[in-house]
Picture 1 (cartoon, rainbow, N blue to C red):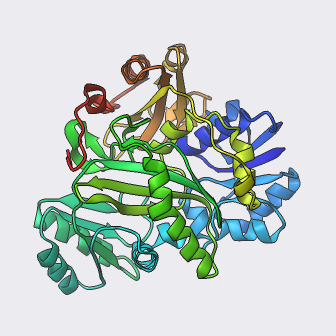
Picture 2 (picture 1 turned 45 degrees about the horizontal axis):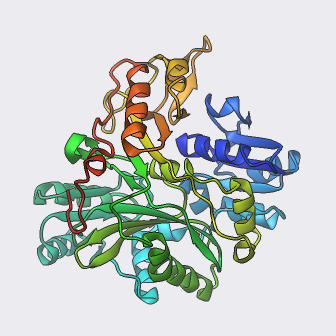
Length: 428
């Protein structure tokens, strides 16, 4: 089959590589793609927020499946336009993508589906924010209600910082936010594939949101991840499908807006059991890459089954026993004011480290054809090895030979897991 993948980041690079590895796939088109994706797929420039343009591209290349990577085109309804044009689409409708596009809507659905989650107050005025902060106490969790590219959440002990973030959220057109109780316990990502009725889960992963070692500094879109989670309860993925994902998918179908695509379930494994922190409507970056790196089931066939209502007959997913570690190389100034346009070198040497694949997150070619940084998170280094220790070593060996002026990365991705130093109910 031919597959069209929408997007231009490391998530889409991972999707393209996984789809291209499926023996049923003979061509992959990426729109718009990036210099890394260009080595595997045909990259075609197109505005991925323009549903008509995307449908026309799918028609031009006669594709069998459209895979929507980022959240913005999902919320913009690109999946709807492509479905109406007759294409099989992996990605939720605009209405269903509100599970990510609106934190307050997601809370409403969770309440209706009896999904365990944090207590929350939806606020549209600073007065409501002040009352919510008083009611829930510190640490304060303040979330922009809309899309914010993974950077709309502030978790802080500082009331001043919480109020400042709330004020910035409310200053936007239609400003609205959610103030939540803080959940103790390690965070876990479970990516659930749904065809609107049946749900299957990918192997859980853990990601690292803060920019610095030991979870210091501001939240980012993610600085690294690993999978599997040997310290997590047995059967965690199946439990989350039963308690969270399936009830949510059932509720969305009951509302007449079936969810077809990836339901990302961000969890805290609290001392009182798993609780949902947030939903997203797409594969995570970089935690989704850690899960995907270990999947042995043909990926494009899995996505096509989800897009065409065939998950119930698809069979169980198959997983490698290996461990995967992802380390993000970020540009100078990320996340506050990332610098772009710096030359990147050493990728060939990094790729020679056994088990390593380098995904392009924010890269471009300059006027001379040289590879340069073009975003805050520039590269995702993915290493797969028989043990977590070996996967960590391979990832960091590869990072060490990459040259990007001013770049930075966390040095402690999966370190506590390697040391056996994670317990349920421990928020560190």
